[in-house]
Length: 317
Image (tube, rainbow, N blue to C red; front, side, top):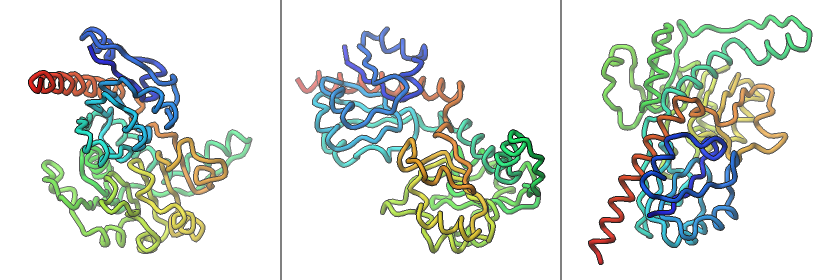
């Protein structure tokens, strides 16, 4: 029997039936504080004696890994590993498995929603009416616009397909240039600089650069089309926040739609409160279907990895 830690907010606040499979396999489940992202202190308290960890987006420090004396497997209920100290994890021989693509539909739909909300000023319209006003802000249409997609994985492809269906000219950048399949005649790969020069709407769906630097720094933001819409449902650090605030102030970026922040929840008075920002609280994968798919894949991965780790340990004896 293994002891398994569950930390994603969506699973601790309302544990789904998929977790019962862990119990039925004879494992003991330990939850972090329900509905909250655990910090370093709580994780250091919880991880000793844990064999498997079904992890979310919480930041894991080297100190947490050092305290995890029995940990063999980390199963992410998403794709990224940015929040994990991979050097320390690999040095310990801990296996990391990911639920690749499980929340792609939910994140893609939110990105599309943020694009539409920015184009039609939906938050300002709704708040104006709620305050008793009658705001009539001139918007812009997707049809005929040039939309740039950075990262053509499962999420980026979905956004590209919808934008193309709505009549946009879709250009994309991905250093690996995966085959586009049915999108081949509707999406064109371009260099990153060309995408910035041409796209009126840019949506980010990529991992962090290997050097850890922001993909969109001051120079990159200054290349963008004046009045561009920028949407980020991927990683907060892809965009240099200080440079972004300056670009929003100058109007170079008309609207920034984001679901991700360096610190979550964000600090009062920060980017989330900027009048040109449409912000959501990291809800891209927070749909019934996405949570169900991601949990099922993460549980499958965890059970397989634990079984393999157990077999390896037994053979070593």
